[in-house]
Image 1 (cartoon, one colour):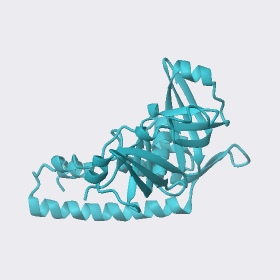
Image 2 (cartoon, one colour):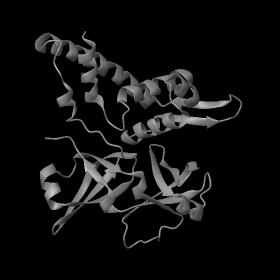
Image 3 (spheres, rainbow, N blue to C red):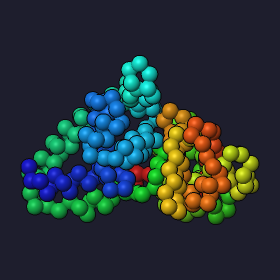
Image 4 (cartoon, rainbow, N blue to C red):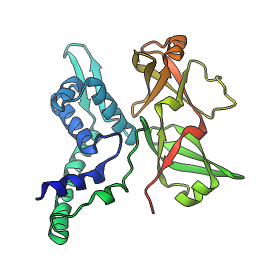
Amino acid sequence: MNSSLKLSSSLFLCNQDTRLPLERMALLRALNTTGSITKAAKACNLSYKAAWDSLHTLQNLMNFPLFTSEIGGKGGGGSKLTAEAENLLFQWEQFLSVHEQILGVLERTMGQNQDLNPLSRLVLQTSARNQLSGKIKGILETGLLTEVTVDLSSGFSIVVQITKDSLNVMGLVVGAPILCLIKASAVQMARSRSLQAGLYQNHLSGKVVYLESTGSQAEIHIKCSESLLLVASLGKDEFVELDPKQGEELQAIISSSAVILASLSH
């Protein structure tokens, strides 16, 4: 098969940043084989942080936990895929097999020198650190604005504010699958749910599982459930004032207008 055709067609699978789901699933496969995020990251030529982010971004897109982790102990700790994740890997292998067959058909019918890159631009690409899948639970129109309530796959709900025009253009209806995109900088962290309660409609609580502070920026990851991890990016001063601790519970506060909705085109 022509390599350029295969490469350009693989862009159909592009989802977030510059990494392909192909690489994410390879990481999940490596985790299944090695039983360690550190070893899986090394096998895929990734840093531990990049592997951690990739796995949890993938997990946020699912409606089930992908793996369980144990720290230390008699067996030295490690990570193990859930039964659902093992089934996901099996389905992915089947998908790749069909994908190869499709590429073969394209090559035979269109020729080896076809440029498929224009088609790849139709696929969602986003730098948003938080990508949460769910279904639309309710739609409330209030003049020019509309409030869309989304039930996330992880069991939480959030309210998203969009314009009436966006509602009509996207053709959103109750029950439709939807993707919520939230930049890390749009997620505020606090210990109290009452922080500016009048301006914010979304409060999700979780335990701190990762902290990093370098230069003028800091990052906090909180685990809200087994299948939902939120990433917040804070300024150094905010981070110092909050002084978060590993394992403590914090509130992630997200403005309803800071969430972008994404759906498949009709």
